[in-house]
Image (tube, rainbow over all chains, first blue to last red):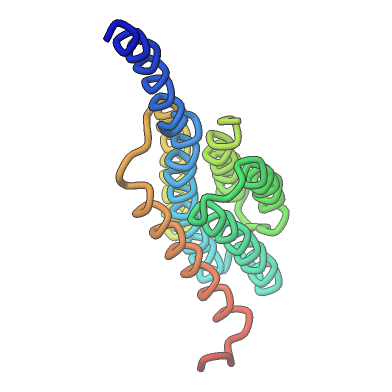
Length: 144
Length: 66
């Protein structure tokens, strides 16, 4: 009986340790949750920016050629953003997701060159907006 | 400056402010645990990206789907 109790005392803490290690790592779970929030915020802002860009074109502040170039930039960024969505949805590798987010941050930085809004104040605001969008994405990239 | 230009600048300013607020919130939430809205956020993001792509396709290729 003494041996049994002694064995039990040895096994219980070990099983306790096993339970702790089997639990989800907080940092890993947090990454996907946080990345989902950030990507959703980013997608909403990008959608509004695209609509404002169309408004700028409609009011004559953006030429047809620049509108086509800007529209292509929005499409490319949204396509790459959707790839990140797919990776997050599938629980993909964090390093790969982070690398894609960093690439998206760089791509967003090229947007002002595609805009060419014929109003300095509006152009400055679009540029400020791209910097803010980069900052939104950076919140996730900095998780690792 | 025309009223349309003023309105556009105001909207851009508002959107940039909103984006900065989102970035600040995201950083503040870094310490939070997983939440139940993760899948809803992902689905919403996917819908937004698809809307942007569809809209861009319509502008770049107006004859497709017409």
